[in-house]
Length: 54
Image (tube, rainbow, N blue to C red; front, top):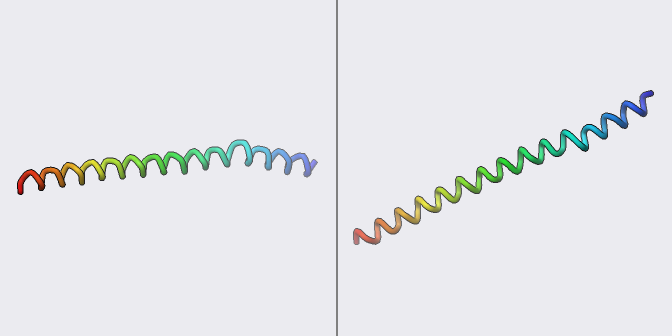
């Protein structure tokens, strides 16, 4: 009985827990990319504004 429970536990970890963790990491990475894109856009606009003032 114990080997069956261990097998079920391992199966659940591989099919449920790991994909959920991967999704969380992917979402965090995507948020980081979006934040960097906003920062780059802001910096580029600011640089253009400063150049036009000179």
